[in-house]
Image (cartoon, rainbow, N blue to C red):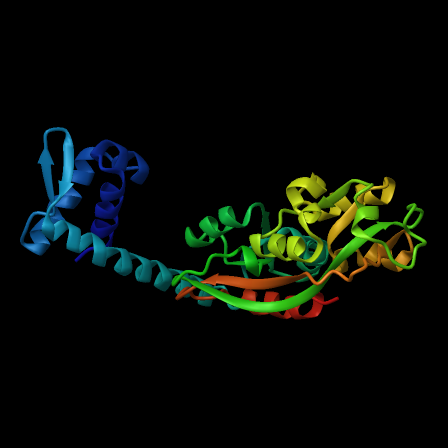
Length: 298
């Protein structure tokens, strides 16, 4: 049985149309028809019924499509594994980074890629939901994101990496910067900036500080780019709410300060390493794992 014929049937089943399937496969409709006919000859039965202008899978066709998805996926992984072995441990990796991880990892990762011969790195940022789709479609090799924003699935490997302290950061000359501790009411006199928060963290904030801590009311600036938010915080009286480690350069050189909230904020950020279950890992990903152990810390 030809794997290519199974791939053609899957695209046809997904599109429901010979014309759309042929266009997606970059072949002619007649070539697609011959491919399906060859598959039916191999199987000894029809996989597709033409009902008017519609194409409908037969009972045999439904069974074949269900099994073919696994067969085609395994064949793709076999080709992927062979390609990785031929690269001899070097090659390209494509990773997705959530807002917090990007603030900690983006620049060091670009610098590392520039100094590792033969290593090619592509980094994607964006909503976690979109990155999950890209991971499932094999556009990404792995993701490093907020664990609380990943919905577990049988096809996902979710490994906890690190739990980092969350808090408030402001510029050194901020009106609240010299106070030993501040209340949330004092903080809310100024614009608050943060990344989109998980439902779990929102509930924690409201439970600890009341409805005034609901991000829909509290947050004036919301963005996935932590570095840009911190740059704005360094130039204005806005206050950053998020992972303290993301501001470590500014805290180290004294341009930024951590505001001590009273009562102390209990929220943390939990980062996870997410991969597709059953997928062969590129040899270069071993380097990436070591890189994460080096750079993901307070």
